[in-house]
Image (cartoon, rainbow, N blue to C red; front, side):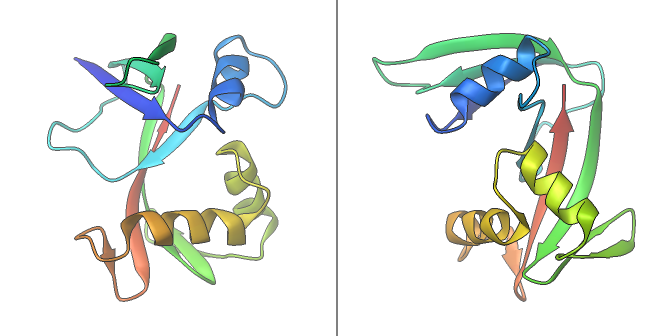
Length: 131
């Protein structure tokens, strides 16, 4: 199955670097689970400005991994295991997704999903999709 992903302009250069395998490239995205879930092996078509006159096709890649996450301001859960938001792993996760640190990443997702079904009791439920 093929899935389209749209990226904000701030992430587009990092996505392009990631598709070329360059250092500092973005090779993942965190999104709410889709109606038609992404699975390992699916084709990912990556865009910036999708559904506008300024649409830019960034590239295409196979999905390598999909993993569920719950993000909270001070921690995150994956595979049922808690991790501190201040840990090295949390900052590495945020940096790989294009953010300076975990706090910036959580703030972004909180602003984006607060008031939706994806945000409950101070946590946002997302899937990490890697290519």
